[in-house]
Image (tube, rainbow, N blue to C red):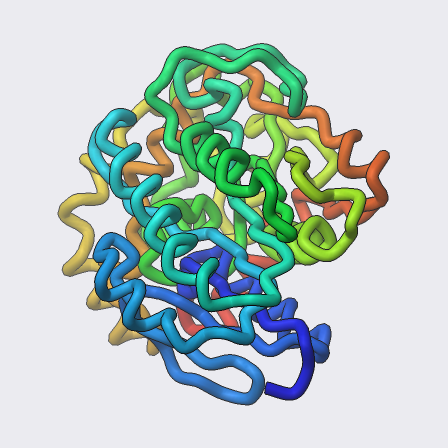
Length: 350
């Protein structure tokens, strides 16, 4: 290792972890170790390790030699069918990682935790908006809250600090990710175009008109490094969003135009149901357009159904981060269109 800032990124292949690693690499003064179940190809200052964070023994074995780690960035996630079932694996992975790395990384300075608006109960139904970091908690189960409680308790009397970031829906490039809205929209639009159909909003009628916000993965990466390295951010939580608001009724026609499509009236439908039989069509599109990923790698339909069901405002106050010194912002329309262009360049979309 060539410097004294060494990042351990858990969830390295996800939309958050992948973009964070790209940002750390661009900064030039970090060495990076990426953790994921699949592993990856090491290059330059980045090396990848395949580790099963659900397995305490495997985690200890793989992390035992990482004595040089100074910053842990935790963005790992395991999906489960119910909110209660999400708690044991997602809390367990964080506990296993900290149990393994804290005793060996003697120069550990910071552990950054990736959360979301579930902390505010946003997944349960209409919640207080704009949500603020000091809002009252809600009835469990909620693994984001349990993870933060664990870090707070573990940090007592230690020299390292923690931070927790709470983005809205995170949009960026990643394959095989269960929560990737930009991919959902892009593949849905590409298949609509292939079938000669207009782009219909598939969510609840009320969801077309509510106010919401997004978080660009690149913006989130910058905020993550800021929170982990600015001493003012120690033991604090921050909402991180693009800084603007939108309604699908305005955004949807702009997205459709980007794919050369017309917009037809909304039609509530489960994407998980109506896209279940589209793999043969996608395989034909892969052949015709030279696309790279398999259908399973681009399918996040259940998450799309979840987001498009929000017939209530979905936003949080991002001013605390600004008060503490983070002033970056992203135009959400440009974010979507840039991601679609990027997906085309990567041969993910035609």
